[in-house]
Length: 202
Image (tube, rainbow, N blue to C red):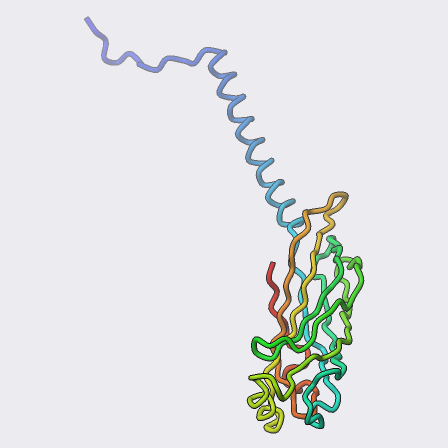
C-alpha cells in the first residue's frame, strides 16, 4: 500500500550540488565582468571636440565697389577637448568661407597638432577672398545685405582627427565643422554670434 505521507523530495547528489555552485559562481563572475567592462567603456569612450566661433572679419568689406576679391579674411575658432584622459591628433586644418553656395575664400590655415585632454586651442586663419564681385550672379543680393548691415555667411573647417585613448589610438575620423554667422556691413562679426557654438559632423 502506498504511503501518502512519505516525502517525495530526493536530495541532490554531491555532483549536482557542485555543478549548481559552479554555475552560480560563473554567472556572478560574468555579471561582475560585464559591469567592469561597461564602466571602462564609459570612461574611455571619446567625446567629440567642441568648436566656438570667436571672431571673423573682412576689413573694408563695405568700401569695395569692385567686390571682396583680394581682401583678407580673418577668423578665429576656439577648439575644446572635453575628454578628461583622451588626447586628440589633428591633421592639417582647411578652411572655406561661403556666401550661400558661393565660395568666398579657401585654403589651409593650421598645421597638424596634438590637443591635450581638457585643452583649448585657437584655430586662427587668414585667407584671401576671391568674391563676390560685381560680375557674379549673387552680387546684387550680397551688396544689398552689406548695405543693410547683415550678411549671412558660413565658415567651414575640415580635417581628420584621431583619439589617443591611453596607450592606443583610434582610427582617423573625417571631421567637418560648420559655423553659421552674420557679418555686419563693416565686415565684422555680429556681436550676438561671438563665441557661438559651431556644428560638428563626423
